[in-house]
Image 1: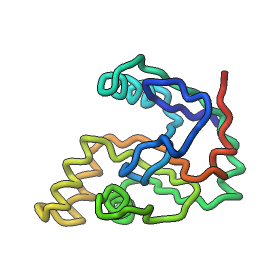
Image 2: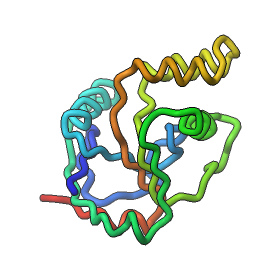
Image 3: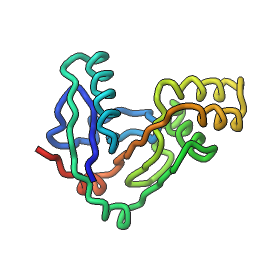
Image 4: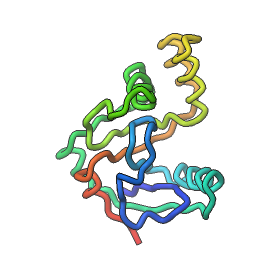
Length: 156
């Protein structure tokens, strides 16, 4: 399966120590099977940090899904929302899970407002999940471990 990473640099080799923290599924590298989504992220990243918008293509060996510890969220739900909120919390200095790969909807900036409203007590969990149903969500694959990275091979 082809997966894409949008950035402002070409990813020659994945180095998990250089990846962002406090994202929806914690600190690691995020990819998507939707090329347009990766292109949009590349444009956003280059606009913020400079450089050129670049999409790096990888081939993902799906046998990882059977051999590694994988958590999959099919759609936004209460469990997904709580998982994302726990991983975005600045109170957590360590990951809140030990999965090698997490697959599920992207909690992008438009969804972040809903999370803030929930976190501030303005809306409850059910209202958060109901609000997510009306947002266009896309998919991400988050690779958390060196073992998981072995299943990704950069396409030249």
